[in-house]
Length: 415
Image (cartoon, rainbow, N blue to C red; front, side, top):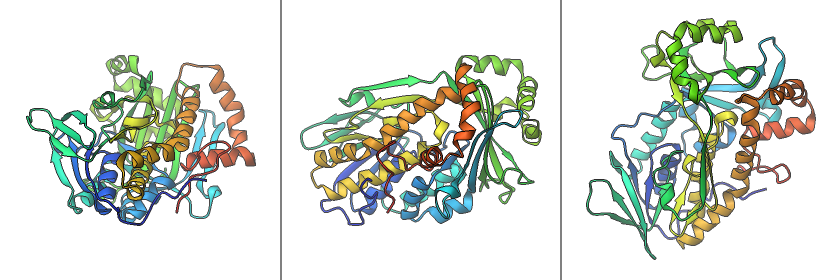
């Protein structure tokens, strides 16, 4: 078991903190640190926030952090409750069948548009008195013995802080400036994503996936409503389709009709969804990468979120790990007045949880997104059976819900 995510006490020694990046990790961190009494400046290189991507899955871990932030009701009102993950082959063979309720009474996920989560966090950040630097591209973080200096592009003078939090995403421009060994490996596979209407609510309550070998995967997940839509009450789903990076341009050149035919050959029931896609501009291509580093801090600088430990989206954990990062970092800074000590405590506290999900992601990704033939054959033969074996099902559920800290280490303590 691990330490609880939150320490309710206000920081014993408030600090000045620069948070770089206004994604999920950055905004949650800025919000938590400001509420604990730290003086926070949030830097974001774009002038207007516009989250990339279509939908994401909030697991019980991420929902717990949002609950403590007072945002869970808003998130649930915007998103869609997910009770089940069901994955099948085109002929209906069950590969994955996991019910959240088997992990505990009331346990569930929330499918939500990325913009809805961003909007909720952003509104809360604006209400805390965080100093905002939108349209500010940080290109240098310099460390001294007692402070860090954050320098922005085209601004001559830097700003001095007690610590800096790097949260600028998978393809971070600042990670390499920190004296921590790290590796980044771009996955050969990415995905097309889009948002479409589900007026008949065919996909309520379920994340649905269809696989053919590991080279074709269609996913459909409810994401609730889009506040900016003229039909705000209309339920929407996000649709995603595996695409090999080197083939992306070629697939677009083949035309939309050829792609739709390929999708419908796999899942004919998706026709009401694909019928809403009239142009390739509706399909956003997302590239993923593995980021490996440890520790995640050096002296007065810490790297969090995807900048520190990005994985493929196969386990649906990116936003959830980022939210837990923010909670644990705030706890450590509240418990330790010395910044290097607090950041060292953070790296220790996050190691087991993050190591497990990076390992699990590396293990599972080629089973679902690759050119392999044997691995998906074994998947189709044994994974569905394992879903109904008590020991295996327990491991799968704790992995799905975001609480697993290792095969023999127990679960994350949510309290």
